[in-house]
Length: 259
Length: 160
Image (tube, rainbow over the protein chains, first blue to last red):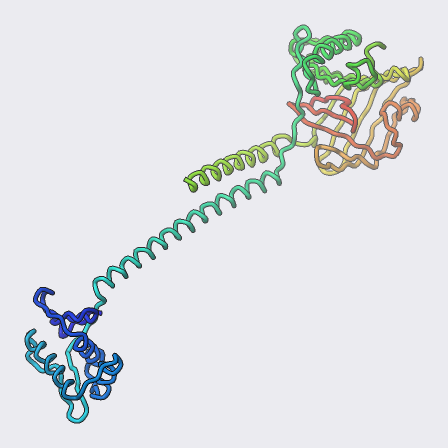
């Protein structure tokens, strides 16, 4: 601890150094003198009994002394203060009791080393706080993103997309596009296209460039078994060529190739 | 680095989620069920095993809510006999997931010249279930709907 007495004298009890303007013109007190001064400074303005001083400054540190010796130490301190330019007496003798240290102002400062340590600690704390802030900030950011994602998924679930029917392009018969509800294997495509052509011819259905034929064959049909056939020709124009006719649909059960 | 990769992963997920949400929202309103649309088609149903060929004009109308209307007009040739179908069905429906319409309380109104026997009609519509509960699937594409029974597509109708 650094004591500043009457805004003039600085005393650092850690090493017993006492000085005024700069440490260069200071002196180092003995350990006992340093303890005595500290004891008095801590009780500035109070009457401190001799017994108490002897007990705390000497006895508590395993030392023995006498009243005369105490007087000598007090006298030394007075001399030091005088040397440092304190003209008024700062340590008063209280007859039959003890002493009273009286300084107008005593302010304390923590030692530079301690200060530095404290500063370092503060810096570390600040760093920790910044890190926590950053971490918390990041977490809040992720929390917001996560909430948004959740909201979007809830919207998606609530407004679940209605599926549209998918058709797979098979090829063309003349200029008419043929699409299948089944995703046909390439080897089946030829079969499906030829079957489609056969059904269109059998039913005398013309499929123009603008038209589209949608088909679905039960796969067993490709292998000579019976199955269902669905065929629909859409986008058909009437004879005037300006109006759409309804889709022409053929639905056949028990269809087989060799029928 | 960890933080950056986290941000990238989260941002990508966010973009994908946003895209999917917009896509769902857009499709939800763009691709509509078969509500209040006049669905018309010409259908030929052929079953050579029972030597039956049916040619029909179909008009299907699903009202938004719970009722629908189906009109069928056409001819049936079965085992050398010819019959006329001319009737309409009024029904209730419930739209379930995946565009499946559960039809119930089907009330048929036959016109005078509708002379097809009930047994034959049941065979034509390929229903082993003689109750009036039926399932219909109507999946949209372009400006059309693919109408199917639970087993197979039956017809595509254009929307007027």
